[in-house]
Image 1 (cartoon, rainbow over the protein chains, first blue to last red):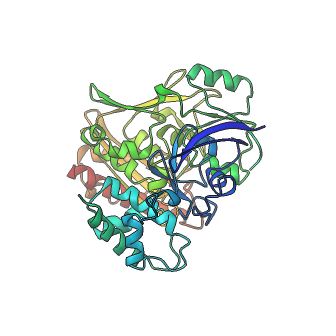
Image 2 (image 1 turned 60 degrees about the vertical axis):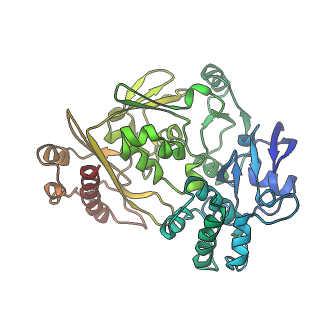
Length: 157
Length: 266
């Protein structure tokens, strides 16, 4: 039996019928075709599926779609401006070559934004520790940390 | 994941009524343990009762030297709450050290306690501070709450409403964090109050427990040196691929000393 689900995704109203066991990441990828949100480990460890749920970074593989009832979800597709201009965090990832295969990048960007929301002026250690919910198997994190520090500087008013 | 039905009641009464329809139903808090358990088919409830929309389960209040935290309050909100940081800084630090940022943004106090994972952080703080777990039916002292592996004093249909933490003179928490899961291999919460010292351990046994031998000694001298010779017997402690029981026994002493140091600094 399906249940009605109403929420906002990247600023757009969404109204769908879902089976209760549908995960948020399945709704985003399979129903809404927002495939920028990745499924990495599938067990809540890697953070590749991280999205914003009411402004908080959460793992969409560990949240039921129905838990997002009446909520606002932002995925990586909703981070850049409508005109396609990269968000300063995305621009910094590009500038500092903070990705190799790119699989972890959407989740990294969302988590990094969550980090800066709580700490606009983080140290290198703050960034390394603050991204511990996101695994990257290519970069060794070094350029990711550089990018987040650069984005923090660019985003400070 | 097996199929299940889902309801989102607005009040505690509606939640209790939903449970009466299906005695195998499970309450859903933040879902950071339960959703993964469902996915691994470790749990197979016919019905999930989501507690998110029940207003009285939310919020943080401080009055008369008691910090009251609603069961559905997320770890990130406890960690960031100025009133918690002021009244019981060690409690804010416990919340700030749970899992990772995404888990803290979704996981809840009540969910953690009801699940009673042997390696969870909150049970050490709740037991260490001598908190009271207020449910939809009664008040349960922390000393009577944790009964065993994933086992609590909660009766079927009983919902945690809030937890009342009495403000201590000083308190500290230290954990040896598993680097991948971020759970506590061993975590020790030490708390100094006008009525004595409490030492609570998580990660080492089937559930959180107190170490009365350390409490007695710390009541006389609240220093890390005072307990350096007190090592728990390894028998009965957890032993797995991450750490053997005797290593966990060793860690209890070391983490307790670090918790005392942390408490003395605050």
